[in-house]
Length: 140
Length: 232
Image (cartoon, rainbow over the protein chains, first blue to last red):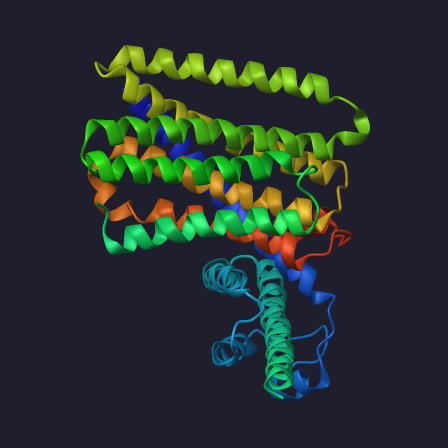
């Protein structure tokens, strides 16, 4: 009985902490990327201007990310942000009608997720170019 | 032997742990983050030991079970010291390292005694259950400490992005482990569904640490209060 009670308390507290740590970790990844400007080429391809993105851009930019080779080794971070995107979207669907502040917060978060994906795409494109240039240099 | 998925996750986790140590070494931060490296290396050694015992005695043997749970308890203690070392980083300007070490030792001893007290009340097979209970409770204590550490980071306006991401990924790792141990305790029948969950998550910790050391510059700065504001 004591063991079971302890386990229930630990399970509940751990799940609550997991949700909070995951959210803050994703925010820390996003915060590190929002200060980075996008190259003009990526702005043109994604339609996202530096510092501002629409939530609806996210799935499209993730599709583009899938087409690009991952030399930057950021797959785990992109997956974490994808998870965060769906989590915030779920919050928007469920709580936004009750709390208007949540709606604007969720819109900002979703837009920043899209911007994070665009910055990751920019890194991948630039890393692919560097790798290609090195390969061509070696083959000469 | 575990299935091919289990084996692949096991090997991947070990390779990523080595990668994390290499990234810390390349950033010349071995001395600064000694306990993080120590934990990763102990984990690699434990993996090698487990593989050796697995080959000699098999997955369902008592030897493997004992080795698995006791090495896991040792790994949890190593990770606990890694958390305490992160406290030293955050409080380094206050010069309270001696008190931190004393409090950490006291908390570790307290958790061990508490685990023993719980197990002695309820189980006939004290040795394995003690290791399991100690791991579960230490993961939970680690989680609580990481929570306190995050609070200290926000309060003391710690801005090192590398340190912040290390602490947050540790928080995620501790929460998943504490939750899955508690779930195994509550419903042992769920093991067949969750058996790939822990190896998969143990790959994420070294990967996020490797990312923090590889991709983030040492002088990168971040305002944690802003993260918290936005998360609420």
